[in-house]
Image (cartoon, rainbow, N blue to C red; front, side, top):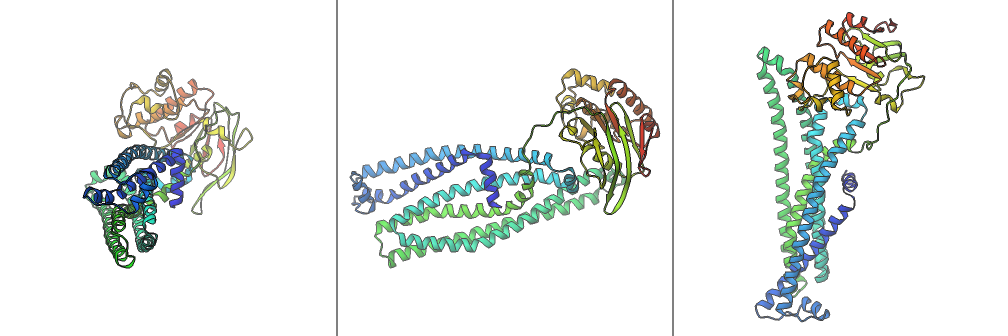
Length: 539
């Protein structure tokens, strides 16, 4: 999973990611040189002579090991470290913002590419949790991976410097580090499992929040709002408890790693002084390096712990992030004949309808009728290409619907998105109408509202009938060849709905339409009718 996260990070960042790694290594090298110069600088400042490794390196370079020379090296190294660190931090901040934005954009395109059946099965609450919780955590996981790389760069450079001073002691320290890693790894897996629990609880919480919003009106009317609040509060408490447990686990992990690191350094000092008889200058320099490594080791442990806690959210988001890339939509093409032959739909082994036949030409309207639960929405979803029939076929001009089919459709479902924005912005979802076109469509559906009127969430400033008129006007802005209305006139009285159908047919004579309705008067406004349970059209 970490490998897939790294590939995603590389795909999003490109060459700038490698530039960031180069800055990390260069900064770590500059910092290590500055640290190595501290001990000889101290010797020289106190009036002593430095005849250790530094003196040999400087002499080999043609420089005298004087206080001024070592001080200049120290200042130059840390000045370079500051400049490289600033460039690294700026680039890292830019990449983090780019990665978060790109992951969110990829998730949106992935959601658009998912089969509708999968989206429907997952439900609104699960999809909301995925977009609002899992996707941001996937971005945080990518940022942690970059942070781990930064700390690893410092660790590698410091280890290489230590190898120059005492290879044997460094190898002992490297072995101790692997042992600490082996101790920490199972605890990281525990963090991952805790993260899986938190991810699942958040999904359940968002699903419950969606249900609460739908049930709130009835609950308040019945005086049973307390029960809803207690149920949601219990779920929220479970999420909080799981999150607190993860944070306690991570704090314990940090304490264990810190203790093991301190013991390791103490043992290495003892080994260097008593077992290897290292010179004081060499031992002091190694001590500086090892002490400096405590911070990155702790940071790596903390980041790894957090990363494993975030991986379950990334795993849930991965199908969206790896979905098909954005493609240019095929242009709409008019059709001459839409045919359905022997359509059947079953759910959980129960047949909802079968043997459904009809044919539709441009300008013709078809009404779909039937009892609740008869599969009316399923039938219209088949026509839209959102659901496969269990039997039968749909043909457009004698062939299976191709990529041009969706571009010529406009679908108004029972509930659709209304932005917390202007009416003009809501009309522009899915198309790019100009102001004249928007006004014409509003007039056609008889919605007398200004284009700059701002709507509240879910269109709360409009009545139920006005919301439906707005959604139909939005669909008409696509200039569709086929209009699909899933009980999209239910909030209008039958006379007003029949009048709208008459206006649409007069103004758009080439547009075909299929509508679901329970009203016989609206069905009579259409050319044909399919009543599920019979399967045959009537006109």
